[in-house]
Length: 456
Image 1 (tube, one colour):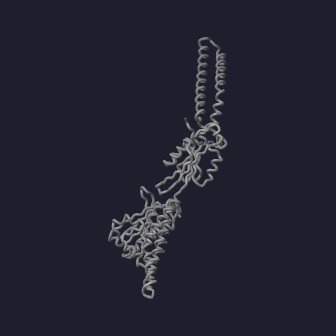
Image 2 (tube, one colour):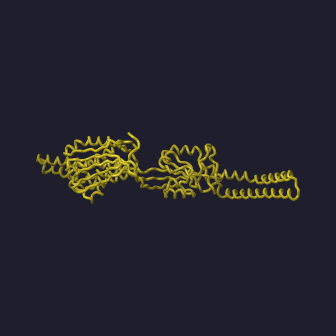
Image 3 (tube, rainbow, N blue to C red):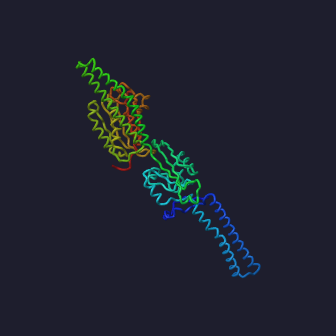
């Protein structure tokens, strides 16, 4: 059986019930009988032509009489064959459904839905994809098998069950590349009532596949769980410290002004620590929620870098550190979120000031590179000449709450989340973070982002 998988003609909307294949069961039997009759008719015509040719050659039959007789026999044969053909055609049009194209009303309704919707016939051929489906799943194309554009086993297996006469199904799956995403697919069989009068078979006329992006819902739930776990663990120590000092001030140190001043200063420091921790946790959660959406706004990193240097000038001056800049004049435009990339650059410079400021200087570099395999890239480098980081700590620096030196980190009022935030922001921007460090020689943090072709 051959199926016509090409798109319908321009006027197909008014001919929505044209079929392109033989129906099942009784329709198929009639189709085979009609084919046999056609074959017999052709053999009769050929035989008649041979007979009249022999009569002309050996019996001297006049050519005019031979042509007249051949025409008469041909007419009789086609007249007898035509008695079966109308019935066969009517059965095909009334009972056939495989390969049917949806009418304009059904397509218009699907186009109005703000979720990806795909209409597939019982043979697995995609008959319509709404605009949202075209945007979200570019591989789905009308007239091609569903498996060409959606290579998800659970969805294809569910479709197979529906095409065999099963009921509605809901399946879920996860995609890992380029970012982790969660989807839910709702498959619903569609049976047209007019066709069902003559063809009550189990297979549906169409299967409607509706795809729901569940990524944001899953990330919200993960954010809630992670926030509770992280906050309860990290806030326990400063909160216990605050409670202890409050109890001391209410008891033994109630009338001691010196102890009161000392304890209040410590309590303020612990409260600020909790505030920084909560701010970083919320920032990290916001970035993770948007990890599956790549930014598309052109941004000049040269301007952004100069803005960050100006903003951190007072911080560096207070620490006695100078920020040196090496920003090339060459175009450094990327597609990104300005606030998030400002946070990346700020976190790296602040870390260099805190942990590598013994040398009294930090360098911020910005340049554009062209690599054979990756194309044009914009490279940001933050370098310090501090004590450096032991090699065994480098691979774990971007983990949440990991500190290469706990005592030093707490002394510098670090939360252990700065590089984790940097890592997640760069993952959203499809960028890379490279860390080079050697004990006694300082550290270099390098960020690579894909250069944009457009200018700001």
